[in-house]
Length: 284
Image (cartoon, rainbow, N blue to C red; front, side):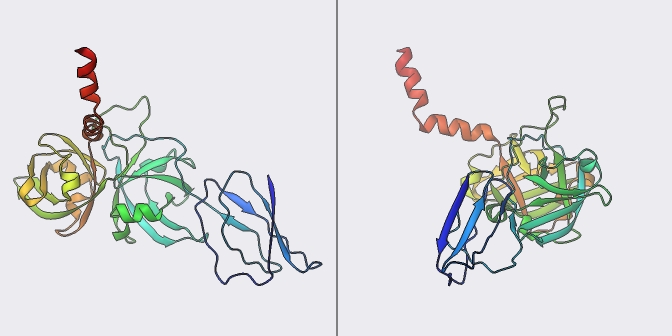
């Protein structure tokens, strides 16, 4: 598809960046033989065009990169390893990137693979086998919804590759779609175990039940107690788990990513839609 766009030679001073569904190239061609400038777009997919453009002669072609999962991934909440953040900030292409050094998850990594980073499903946009590093892009909504913005170079993160058909299901179904964050309010040891209490919003707390599943920073855990009055829930980490996840490394007041069990949301949706009432009417 080829589009031609004409505009005055004095464009607005700013441009608007819109998210693109795929990586595209915009080839800018300036025609000095006419009074107005022309942009010709060679587009390999359907996109939304920006509202304003500015152009200069001898300007290099622009290349935009978007990060988007092509398939729906699933995780178990069993952390494979802890990786180290080596970079968090704007990349060369203008996107906001997170670069992580790891071992296990980069052994067979490919571009486009999904990796859970502290419970957040992210897509591998680049990797370097020589340095054992991979890079993922962070969208503004991801930064708003998760605690990833609090990371810095040197921070450790929980990592897990997406579930495969041959993978043993050791935890529970974790989508990597963070529902929100919680704040650690206490870390209390008992023997070689550790009690952790997390405060979260009432909107999330209603889906959390004692002895139910929950993913905290991507770790599949069993809820011990729900304290509605304090808007908190608690869980316990055994010695082995403490040595292999990042939660014990955090301090009181720091945030954790929380993903509630998806089954609770499905049940709520069915009840609110009148599904149960329709079954009763049909059977009567």
